[in-house]
Length: 433
Image (cartoon, rainbow, N blue to C red; front, side, top):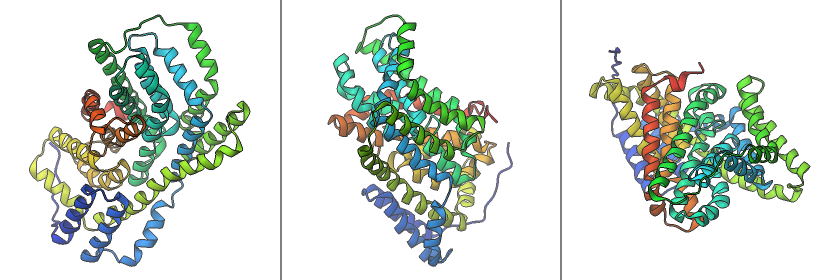
């Protein structure tokens, strides 16, 4: 058994008061960045652990990072892919790859989500882009619209699980870990989640018989689809190939990806100068949500560190149990609950520094911890009440969120199995080290 750390830190109402207030505001639906800002200001005022005059400087320093430049660039790359209709060619390639098996269109949709995840790094962008394209075809094929929406929402969770991932960039920034290292480590876990969702859809189709058409794999059709999608395939090859080979940093690869996508768009005649204002606006909207949360959440995390909250948390948990298995299950429970009520970005910035000492205390490698945490938080995209992907698909289809959520239950269960496997079998996360 590992030697456990004993902390002498004790917390009083000056910490618990603001913490409870923040939870109440989040449950009332107040924007996360507002809650974090108000809670941090109140916490610093009551505890005086840091002077309030440092807030502005700390906020600026939190987002003044070269690594974070990759976030808007990957988002913009995804927008360019959608605008130039390269995303549709990726879906056609996915259909040529797996469309011949039973439940081929549904399976191809999930694989298409995985292909798109290799470019955008964002699950919401994945859900919105592919949902518009695939759901009408899924419904025409025989899928109930609520199940089709749940399928796309579940497949789109790979947007933060398959590299390049915005979430891995953020957790790397928060914990001081190379994003390139995390991208390498996340390759197998991301594919595991993708494969699990595909197999779940196949199993459900065998029972429900939404889609029963079968065929044979055609090398000719696959070759044609691959040729038509050659430019779309080139972009993730540049991103991941450049990162894994060490030629590019994630930020540099994102820059090259944007330039390549734009050049392809102009070269194929699918992109016009008039498209840029709207693409830039969409990318700015997404990044405008992420950046303030990162800055304020980093400030809040610094306040927690100054109050020695991680040490107190570690002492409390290890006093409750000394079993590594129990601690992993406890961390999973925290991540699942947090993912249900708050977005991934603030969860990472706040919980990662809090949980990492606990993970290391039971012998968990920091890379293993990052993969375990991000994958667990990914489940939150298809679980209410927040369930960002559920809301995106509800907006596209008009189906109530809870109806989509009920059809997503098998996928939640499948993802939980993969998360547990990642938590208890470190090799899947540290194979590239």
